[in-house]
Amino acid sequence: MSEPSREPLRERAAEVLWANWTGTSTVPSRALYPHQWSWDSAFIAIGLRHLSPLRAQLELETLLAAQWGDGRVPHIVFNDAVPLGAYFPSPDFWRSTTAGRAAGAPADVQTSGIVQPPVHALAAWLVHRADPGLSRARAFLARLRPRLAAWHRYLLESRDAGGAGLAAVLHPWEQGMDNSPCWDGPLSRVDPAEPGAYRRADLAHGAPEDRPTDADYGRYVRLAADYRDRGYADVTGPDVTAPGAAAGAFRVEDPAFNALLIASEHALALIEAELGGRAAAARSYGHQVRARTLTRTLVARLWDPGRELFLCRDLRSGELIGERGVTGLIPLVLPALPSGVAAALMRTARGPHFGLGGTARLVPSHDLTGAAFDPRRYWRGPAWFNTNWLVAKGLRLHGERALADGLRAAMLDAADTSGFAEYVHPYTGEGCGARGFGWTAALTLDLLY
Ligand code: 2M8
Image: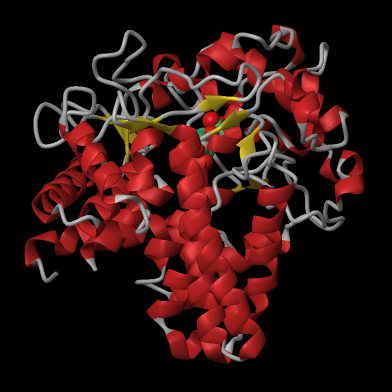
């Protein structure tokens, strides 16, 4: 789309990405998040490909070089040039090079031991398409393909805690919407770590009322420490509710996490087809079949026809969680979604809970009418650019062009006026959290190309 009036915005978005580039990857924010984050990198690569396809390839290569032997892609790859105290939990908390050895953590780079949503194969495919010649010359897809396949295998086998075929998350940081009200129930079972046992580096850079509470943080730390102390061993099968099983304290099947896995399975099918040959053609077909099967499983496990929204399933209780989070709209990105489900989701997006095209400027992270809604506090209400980009993509896919165009324009305006804020107030568009934020700038660029 040629929009001369948006040219200054494009230039400023590019400046943010150049400023956040470290030489091998991009930080979400120099101040608040000074390392490489997994799903941030995938979204950043999707925007960066328009400026430098080479850097976009390097971004994903750097992340996947830190993959563990069991296939997991860590949620943080630490930059050892950054002082330990700059971010908590720092590498000495995760101890990946010692506690993670059984799972095959790399010895030459420090990482966390948990994961984030698998947007990577989707990003790799989009990065390839930005410059197929460069991609082929560097064997970009050929080198990434086995790593992406191992990553998905890890999620579909080692993380199938519910036994139904979907991947489970073991920590709110894994799903990425850290303090979403969807987690309040499952988190209430977790005993918080002692407040004196750690120091919240995030509060040096973010307003406390925009960040998760101390009560939440104590529980995040406890869950992560328990997982670390088990050597990051994953437990699947029916014993997750065993008494005293700290391993099972937080186990949730999440719609966005699984929808992104399915979208990435579709992308892996395209990657295999691009690589060519008989074996790749067979693998491509396998990914297509799996994506369709997983879409059916997602609907069977997490669709709530009454609320017309996908919900999270608490595997500890076995029940669906009644909170309406933006996670429940993200399956709109799936091409094989039954048309009735897609139509219902679009009604929900426009309705009172998310207010799209009506009361809200951007899709909020949580139900506008819910008791837990808070327009400033992180993932409990503010609008985020990655989720809005996904919803806009889904609306377009399912034929809602006018609504998608309106959302795109609102995202560009909010990115512009907020200085590429980490998240914004869903009614006013006022910026919150960090500025010059990586995926905000990257996805702005993607909308402009
Ligand atoms: C936020 O999460 C980190 C922990 O991973 C934090 O709060 O310190 C979330 O918004 C997450 O989705 C995001 O990937 C990360 C870095 O932008 O920040």
